Image (cartoon, rainbow, N blue to C red; front, side, top):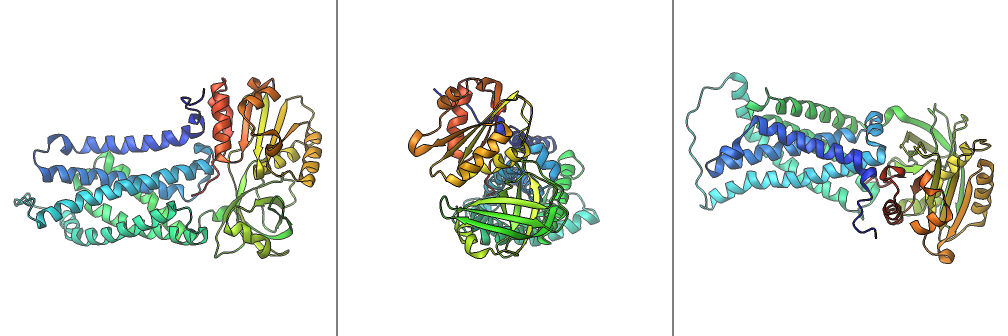
Length: 452
């Protein structure tokens, strides 16, 4: 019975803490600065409070999403990998979309109601005299509302396109950068329309820091400097296309300095600037010779076209390395599970462990629908040299690899942690089964290899 087991908690833990921590901090600091929602005795004061609160949340999460987009190494390590960073980026984007629509409805809805005669607009008194700065801010309100509204419309369209899987990546890569422009306009909108009383309080200081950081990140994106310090130029040294199982093997010889990588990490490859960078796992161990190997599965339009596009000697930009799928577990043994093209990080790890002399038990399960004799021959050779026990699992012959079957094949499974790379559904079923059987959540390691 695994239905009631919350088996994904460990994988999501850092990004859940960051996500809910950010929302809690923004809301709490706003309530410390403004008690409108508790004290409002009429509709329009309540409406103004909701508009301010949704504005703080919307700009706060959007600013952090912009910061995450620059692929900072420090943030990546804290969140447990760039895959987790992009998952949090997606959550924040969806939150910004929902909160921004709510903000817009509360801002525009009452105006429509007044126009239809359903509400009466309250009359404003003279109020206290304004200082020069406040007068300038007040004079910009109408313009800030107008440009902010159009930036909101643009941001909504761009965020919806980012969530639509069938929207081609080569177009998404270009349109998503336009969000940086919309964000900069919304920063102006937010700075002008945020309640002046907030700026001297913690919520104002936090918003200033977030919007400043987001602004810097937006310019980094617009000037195409994301990952600039981690790029290396090389050329395609070898291209081998295997019709079955539809995998393209690409060797890249770098001309620039590469900091090295550990098995399990990935890099962004740019073969065509118009197409943009795509992430692929590095399937070779680092030997210090500037040569990197990639095995690319034909999963989409672009990867299906690559065999006809790539030629020996083509220039390629490699950005990385990224990822924390580094095989650093806390248990004495390890169990590796590869589904299809998910074998690539384990090939690199086998190469790195060639000739090892320790007795740490390692079991590799390779699950495939269509076994390739050449791949299996090389895999057996690598496993033997690395002293790794290999289990080839052909689903058409053996059925699906389940947690029960894995435990039966590895009696010492409780003394090992699991490293998984493959389809998400496969991972979910295996992880839930093992957690239900007593495995700690922290002992199941998986990359969320979806960048959209």
